[in-house]
Image (cartoon, rainbow, N blue to C red; front, side, top):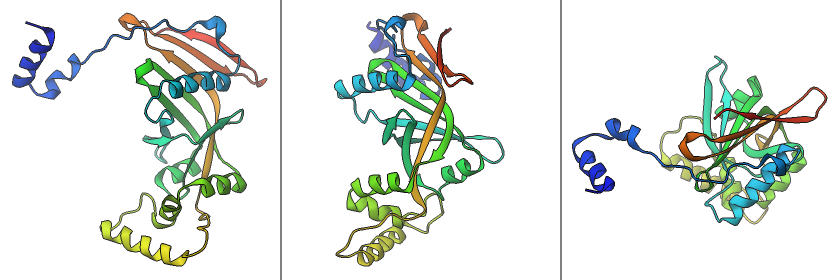
Length: 229
């Protein structure tokens, strides 16, 4: 009897709660060659991001963002990266949203990228800062008109009565900007995560993964070290 048949037979008699520990995949890769890593983690991120794009991974800019609530508890959600450069990693949101309020109270945050098909993960820790109004305007103008209208419609994270309420607001905003450009709401814009720690993870066999951590020193230079898996 094949292992798959055995698993299916077990599945018929057990719940997923019982079976979840049985889901496994062996990560076979060549690992991380430290001798060819870039000195700057943002440059190294670009190498890995380009690899994800070249392999046609679905939405390679998907990442999780972790922020801190006022009571010290963590908060996490999935977002899309919309830019990165020597300053850091940029995304856009409603400043009055739950995450926006958490960032206002404590701007320490973390991002995680997972490119599972490549057995690669990047973890980034640092501080969040608003990008300039000009940068937010430039990105906002590049968005589809429907997304621009959506930024006006959604009071993100606030309770609403029903879907119809959103649709009514869409009609109101469409009428307001009929025949003219949709301007950016003042409560909507970008944040840049300025990194202090960046870890590159490459899955390997037997869970003996490669982990290389970049850490920014007081002299603003990056150092690298290997971490135990």
